[in-house]
Image (tube, rainbow over all chains, first blue to last red; front, top):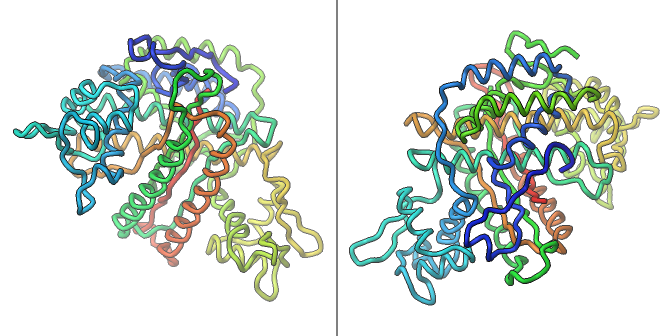
Length: 255
Length: 239
């Protein structure tokens, strides 16, 4: 990132204090920089400052009654990873490959061990409370924790989570595009690619959606595994050695 | 360049007003006030007096990079070392014309060649067209090409996020895919290796999609039955 204000911070929660300084992308906290980069891209493409000011005024008028949602902390945004692990790690699947219900505590194949593996610095009870609040898990009479939904989806309380998720995706892609357009060193180029069809038969959209979901899942699971193998386990190493990296996928449709 | 919208409401860089408006809506939903947004944009515009405009790819030319992808990946167009081979413009296949026909059916090969030459992505000497492999790092005029695809990607992602958020309110609306895999504890010494892994896996993933989408494209265009669909992959980097 070369443009706009640099206002990275660390969340000063007790949990964060135990962690190394994480350069987390959470969208909302770094919004001025992301907005600046978007404006820069538009100006580079020939949009004039007058056109921009006019469009901005119109947008702000249109959204003047938008209700602000209570945004989740960056730590909470990571909890979605618990759901991913639950659906893909063999230890947490039953004989038919479906996520099994888990006892809350225990050394192996419990909800606590799942949280330990997927979000190492989070507290299992805190994660459970958030997932319960969003209706993503339930607790059976036996006390076992059951998975109810595969991912955070934009409904009710989850909408705030989804806005945060959206803003972090936009922050990531805008930053990637900005870096690619401003770097002078080919080694700094970052992946940013699309595959599209302009004359796609609309009646086959459900078929494409299914193909996209399956292939994206396989792709992301592979990346999750690669990244996990190379994560720094101990938090005492030099901070300069720790980076925030990953990959995002989005499908699109337009006429 | 004129940014006046055409009859379809689009400019050369797509629906930029809509992209901006949706971004503003996300920010307002996240609790950023109108005053903060206005102040930030005014402050930043004050710094941007010298920004030079880049020529961006026209909307109807945005499909042309697919020709390059096809050239680099389809065995018919590769030499024995797996490199894109030089092609005669026309004649016995494989030619540049057959490449365009295969990659973007219905497009005019001469027009595509003119555009790719303008962006210095190919050379054409005595009827032989060559891919400038050493020029794939965007410089000068090529940055305009990258900027065009960048804004198209942003529009697509913003639209997907917006539709997904609105889908929660409408039962009939269907959500679109929007996922990530990331870590905040990556050992920086592995960053180069990750970029290589990402490039390779994204190439395979996108080639698979290119081929799936191509198989399901309609040859005869009935505007009521067609739409633009696809998938985008982007890297995430924290600093």
